[in-house]
Image 1 (cartoon, rainbow, N blue to C red):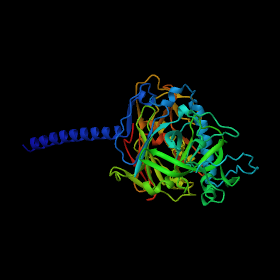
Image 2: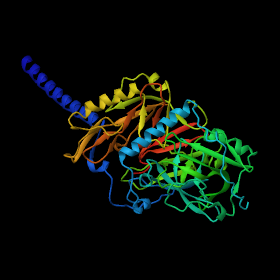
Image 3: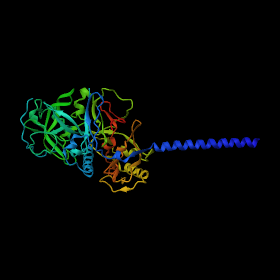
Image 4: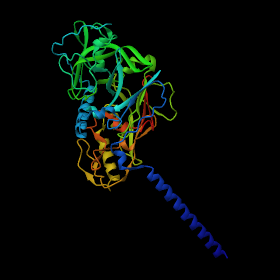
Length: 485
């Protein structure tokens, strides 16, 4: 009898053990799968159909952002030859070189030679959200928004850039050179609210920090000059005019560069809108209304509902995670504290000092995230291990981990997340992990710096679909999910 009891107990225990094992195994499977994205390959490729954007109430001033590859972009209908992905990556590296030079206080001086530009006669003296679209069709790898300038208002499509401060646009007359842009070049003589800024004004002297160059002077009018790492530049009069973000968000006396000598890789955009921290940035100039608070969401190549929004009328969303800005070097860039990176649920073995060595900025104008060499090698190695079942493809410019997925309809890729100061974890969208040059060449969308001493950059590919909030006055950066598609 005792033997029978023991046998029954053993059988029950065995069943419990089997059940426990099954449950544990099932749970483990769920845990493993939760660290991967399973997706259709088509979600990484450009779309050919347009789904009109449905604008929601964001409050404030909101401008639309449309992805550079997006079929809804009116700019794509102009038959302009878009640059190849290889060209975009080359331009991106030039930008990175420029940023890293600026951080090390290497500035350019466009006024070493005497300015021979003829003087143009002086002409008669909440929250807002703007549609934003990417600029591939305009010959640049950056996103763009459309604002209004002057009276009557003229629409201008500008690259929006958190790594720059000065807003500028090409202006008539082009006394030396202007690159081809899609919209008519702004003519200040047709605006009743335009006027040049004096050389002796405080605003003119502030150009040094906003542009990296000492201002010039032409017939008592302030002259600005700004040059980028790829030798692109804009030179012209520093001026004021009426800025229109939305019909109810209008700013008189907005200071900007009216460029009469412009050349470089700006594609067919009309110029650039600076979202940095400097007193001359649009963030600072609209602070009285928007409180130095803005947000944006960058859509994927298949998305059509991105936005750049100024102000915080709807209050801070409880779903946002915030991290404090790291101490900055200079007044322009937005530095963040990266503590670590996880791939497929696995925290990489990278000392936090690797990221602190040179620091990291978040930048809307850089396409591909740049990591310290040690961090990138670790990330690349782990990612390749998870992707070992897929055939490799040739490198694509600076992207050295590519796969031929042309024989697949569905793929599984490890999730990648960044751990930031304040226990903030940023989980990347699949489109922020892989960049495709067609199904036969799909690449890990990260690159390494040549060493651990160069500044890291959290680029715009990795920012896609995230709601990113810049509370500049509060010195913090917020991240949310599902901000756009």
